Image (cartoon, rainbow, N blue to C red; front, side, top):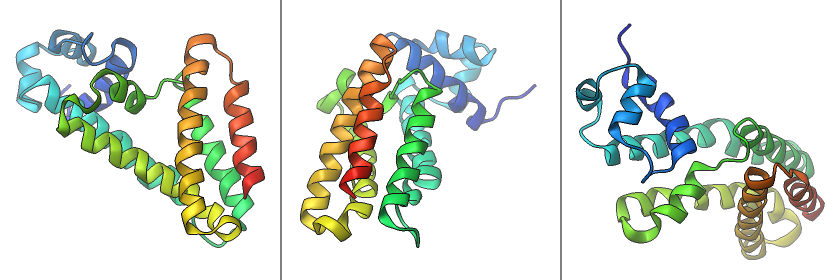
Length: 180
């Protein structure tokens, strides 16, 4: 079986999620793909290049499947509820692991190639959260609340990952819906 670039990215997501960026080697990634390390370099010249493709893949998924739920003809409360359900479902299936958040903490602003992509993801997420809040709070306050709710969600995801406690995430999402 010949792996495509997309196959490699999909398998790399789980390795990075479990081991982190610095704890993952190209040998780990190749093993997850069932290929030799040299074959992995055919698709990606470096671990950085593969990690950046993983971040883009995650962001693309959220842009296509999750963030659009915040827009449309439904009432704001229904849009926020749909958005929070989709976010909860995505992260519940990953034990609360947020690779963007993990990479932000692990790599941080130390590498601008990563920082710019991670910031774009969180900015897009905050904008999606802000959209249903705008009718009630206005643009400026909705943007502030959007960023606050994303930050609160990230903290709740950490607790979900560390302790398996999904109550903080549920409370955060209930507060988001109540704010619309």
